[in-house]
Image (cartoon, rainbow, N blue to C red):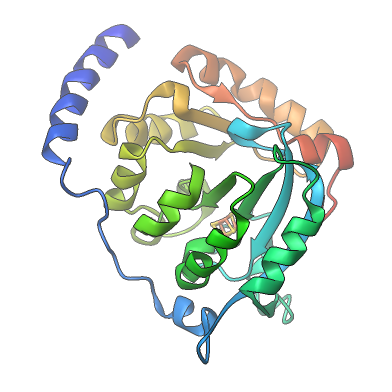
Length: 271
Ligand code: SF4
């Protein structure tokens, strides 16, 4: 049954790839948040929520790799289960971040890097709200691979893609509680799929897989590029949820991503 579905999918995807080969960068406008946070006179700046490391990447295709993190402030979504509300929820966390010069940020990150194999992970919040400042930052980090994490609602710039070693895109599902027109941007996902990005979905029940499969098929994403991550901020809960969804992951050829940071350190910030 699954093989037949996959066969039809392959045909559709081959056609789609040909039709869309000229529209890699869709150029959708970044909303007003980005204008609030990426400029301060002529100096390139970023609104930073936290810089931490050295640690390990806890999630997705790089799980277990040595990493330092740059978490940018602000997000254009408001997921109900968000575990980093402190990066965007201004009502609960009025001091969500400080404006920093990109040179100062690069120095801080380099100070925490252990070796050339340490990944620099840019995350949020939604980091692509601050594309302009990031474009000024990335050339300063030339010694290390830079991995971007994004919610898949804003398009990557060509320059960021040139400096990025890989993208992990985490499209939000109905379980986020966010309206579909805000969280689902087909052209952006199509762009990332063509770029070979990894896709990470948060799930805690089998019902979410119909929605995940639909996104995977619509955007011709290889199952090997899909990571399913159980929701949970405590180790026991995470393992319980993983047991609920693991058969759905295996039957589709997707990858399971645990959250190493939760298993090791629990619900702790900055690790
Ligand atoms: S997109 Fe990510 S950072 Fe933004 S609210 Fe959702 S989970 Fe949180």
